[in-house]
Image 1: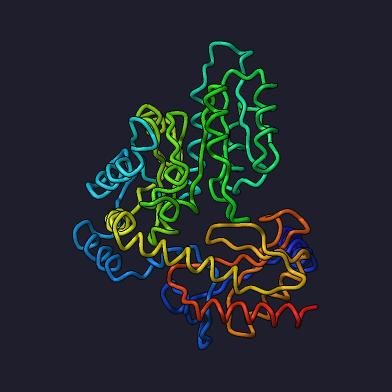
Image 2 (image 1 turned 90 degrees about the vertical axis):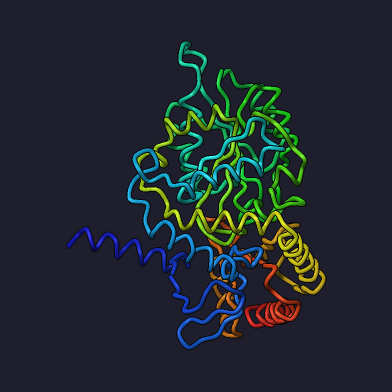
Length: 403
């Protein structure tokens, strides 16, 4: 059949370019030490930055939530799927972010991808339509996550201007040169494949100067950055009603789901217009119940201890790593990317590590720009110094093996 032949040809092309992906099935909970079939592996690939994904208190919270609310919500939030667990979680999230976002209100989503797809199109739609010449424009960082890129594609009434990664001067010039009457700046907070943090204070200043929304996706910062784990806004002590903030709950929070926190009027608008909220079944209430427990851990003394342990692991890794050809990209976060270059070389490095009993993923285009394939090393508070020493020794061996 020609249709299948076309797919087979495309798959073969991906294979030749070293771009074909494969799935691996874990037989153990998310942890630095996992098992796939009969193989034991030391993993540096998950986004469980605080090591909460298998925390006993959260396992018990999930069971407690299921006993209280059952295992499914049964409908979309605006039909009958919005439980007390969802409502309490949204109140908790709004309270956490209220020092940084005036009149904060929260909306809970099934995933971070769905949250991001909701925000940008809805904010574009909220622009004044009285004047057809005023126009709408989105200013997007060149290294934004795929969900933010897709969100701009869904905002069909807006012009999209991409600015060079974290280039405040380029963004300022683009904003000043735009005649659009309704503007959005869209950025990751922590960039998922580079690990660096966006210059949010400067971006917020530009947003206020040009009366623009600043849409911040803090998927990899929430729970980790800031004294209390409130993310990039707390990290920078940044407060503005121009900010529309997205965070995910399946990474540092160790569970699942996502949220948007913004001024209460913005959240009310999303409640009316966010298609990925309106037209999908609500996440199980047991998940929301579990996340509430996770947020209490993150904000408390245990969260502070885990963030300190993670920072200690980051510093230990940087002090211990020795490579000749590969380059560690500058990052102060748990994401420590080791730049290799070609797709084939990155795959060879990952395979050498796998043979040594370590799981470190090779990241290739389109996730990263062509020619910048890398090993994405993700550190966790649950890693030990011994784990990190093992990784660094294996990296040195893999580099020698693949030269």
